[in-house]
Image (tube, rainbow, N blue to C red; front, side):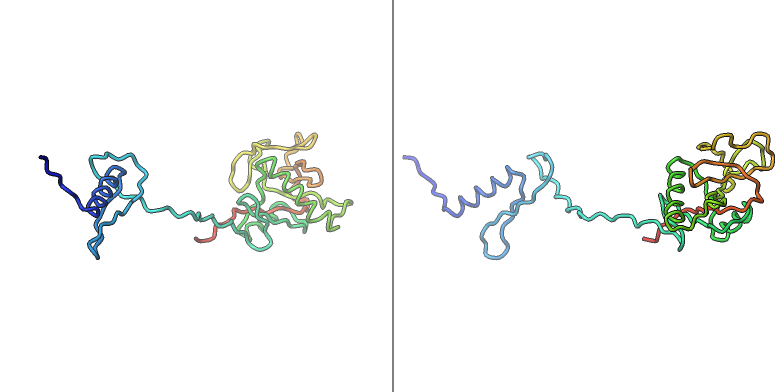
Length: 216
């Protein structure tokens, strides 16, 4: 006659819970207070070896992302693509215009892309033409920028950086061939085309400086 071992029902529940926990990669611990058994499941994102413990779950990552603060420009400057621009309509010579830009911590604008040239062209329309501050009988639509070939005739560079000018948008018959005096670059902002002129010609001008990032 075979003897039968009877296991109490609570013990069966405990055994089943423990086996289930081990099989699923969970951690099983007894409850500390009343002696009853409890199971604590730690969800892990791994394929662990069932013969050993799984690593603890990584803490949740914050879903909030910090965005960089926008670049800042001084008053009266316009912020575009990490640069700051300021238009001056009071006519003056190229050299004086550059001195004024230096006073603001800026430089005569270096127009290095077609997009930048188009921006200056459109901004001139917004600032002066639509506000009726544009006189078609004068040179008010010409603005000095930072290009010059005063050091080497025919070799055009940006005065602020000394870098050669790669992007160009000269008007027809410009720069003037054979003229050793017209060494300074201006843009006809009515058309967006480039011209060279004498330093002594009084024109408006555009200053440019790098935008600054505010402290985090």
